[in-house]
Image 1 (cartoon, rainbow, N blue to C red):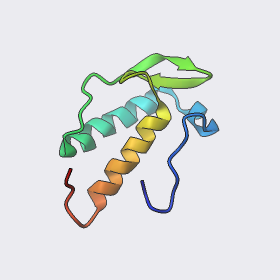
Image 2: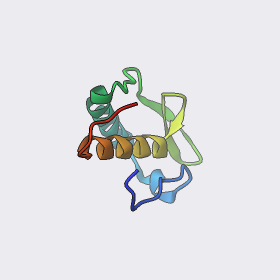
Image 3: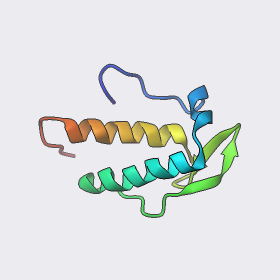
Image 4: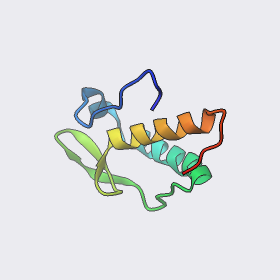
Length: 86
């Protein structure tokens, strides 16, 4: 996470506003950025279902907040001046 922000909670009201096409675009970004770090979910798709109005993603039926937080971590790591190590 960026040092100046808190991870998004799964029940954050903003997560209800994501549409399936928007989440599909985020998944495409995950596939692109994640490849650089060996983070790949080739089978990840929108789950075509919701829980309490929030769209689920089919990699363990994760909420959109998980995808958004993971992308933030990858974007931050990608932009870091020092190389990433596990």
